[in-house]
Amino acid sequence: MPAIKTQRHSSKKEVIISKAAKLFREKSFSGTSMRDLAEAVGVEAASLYNHIQSKAEILQVICFKVANIFMEHLERIEVNQQSSIEKIKDILRFHIQHMINNFEEVYVADREWRHLNEPYLSNFKVQRKNYRQRIAAIIENGIQKKELKSIDAPTAVLMMLHAISGIESWHRSKQKISAEQLEENMIVILVEGLEK
Amino acid sequence: MPAIKTQRHSSKKEVIISKAAKLFREKSFSGTSMRDLAEAVGVEAASLYNHIQSKAEILQVICFKVANIFMEHLERIEVNQQSSIEKIKDILRFHIQHMINNFEEVYVADREWRHLNEPYLSNFKVQRKNYRQRIAAIIENGIQKKELKSIDAPTAVLMMLHAISGIESWHRSKQKISAEQLEENMIVILVEGLEK
DNA sequence: CCTACCGATCGGTAGG
DNA sequence: CCTACCGATCGGTAGG
Image (cartoon, rainbow over all chains, first blue to last red; front, side, top):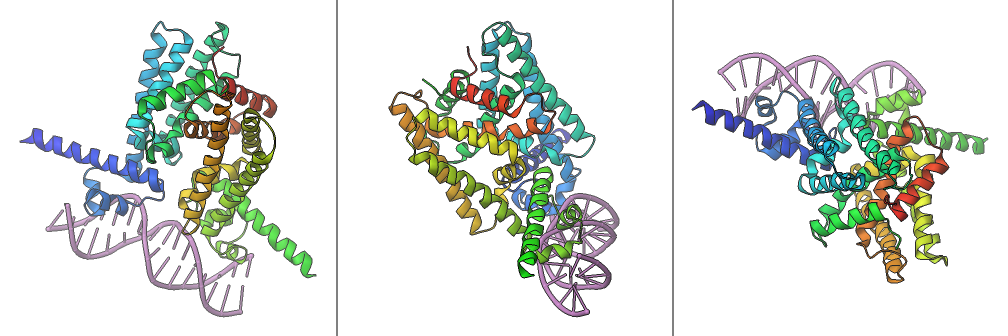
């Protein structure tokens, strides 16, 4: 039955990608050997190459999968009719939720993309820059409409995104507050600030 | 003249540490070979070992140097008589300034510390946890005194510190705003929020 | 500071 | 999916 065989094959590749994301986060891309990965998957190192082409391919898959998810969400936000501040909140919530639910891969895409090879490296950088500029444009629009303070929009984007990517170390420790509470806290801090 | 000899020796070690910080940031700790470092310093790989004991030692020096600078500053903040909000602002300004002026080493200490060997790894984790908890205590004090919103203090600490560590990618691009403007923008966003 | 070199490990391939 | 193996490179040492 070829259908099942294909399914199994694709599923095994997904297992490899998933285990790799975990290891790349813990030990970094360069610090993880294909033998480490093979052990985590439960096969010999040579067997990995029946499912993936190279170590580099694994990183490519992770980085572009994550980039595409965020880019697609941004495109939906851009065309809707919300206020700037609602758009920003929506983007923040989306990032927070993905960081909580899928943080191994989001973390790796965020921290290990430098190890991509060309032409993927340049492609990724362009996408990343584009993504940030389009969020900055939303912020600048909000400043013009007096919804937001007149702060430097590119700085605000970097701070927002990095503030959220920082929850990983929290996530791994004992969860003292729920995901919903975490999300609300983060939105309040970023939108309204710390000061009472 | 032994005094001069010692000075030269220590100076060369500083050059090695400095070049290593730059390479560890660009290519990560595992992705940087001692031959890469030797080339950046302008010697053969074997010659590096006249100044340092091991690759691991370089990372230790960078991580604990940075950790000590921030810990010493926090200790000065804790004993002074400012309001909680002034203490938080002071910590933020200190982080921003060090990120701007010394960002190679601060970045490496922040992102590459996982590659430390024991017992340094455990020691570093304890210091890091302690540092964050003491800032959280300042925030909690501010909440009690109604100076700050009643947000989750550990979450606020992680967000603040990561928002600031995110300026590195900005710093490396063309500087459109000055360091002073950057600092003011970041303080406003974190303390007062984005919303007008 | 260099040349010469060590054993270990790397990503990846051949062949079954 | 495995065993067996490749050339390249790793961190580090010996000896001068």
